[in-house]
Length: 208
Image (cartoon, rainbow, N blue to C red):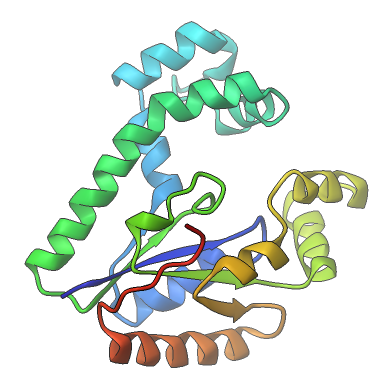
């Protein structure tokens, strides 16, 4: 059986870092955020719905949906966010199920889906195990300030809009602490993969 693992965290906590390490180890990883952006590429039904709802201002010079402009709209408007999620999430979940089916068909012992909102959207039942990538708040703030070139105040506002990492850590089956060096994170990931391989497709999920 294939163990289906959900990988979650918060902005700048290091989900992508952990996902990259897993990929380097030969473990199949699906980035749900990337899938979201694939389902509203030009020519898709979702693309047409989003442009009709939010206007041409969300389209960049290449005719693509401008992720930053769309994100700015939905970040401060719950109704707009709900519209976006309702338009994209059924398709994304379908792609996730296809990914898991392919992994099972090829008899992979482990597959991982990287998704930010597993707990917020009550999607825990899709996974056998859930892993939260955690870092302390100060590290998270400093990383976000450096990555986006924004003020500390802006970084705190973005972080405060999300479920706290402490809470996500409590809901998870396993936690990777990414507050330290890349080598420390890699060691934790390798240990976790060994543990999950031993656990197999055992019952137990975090968050639901």
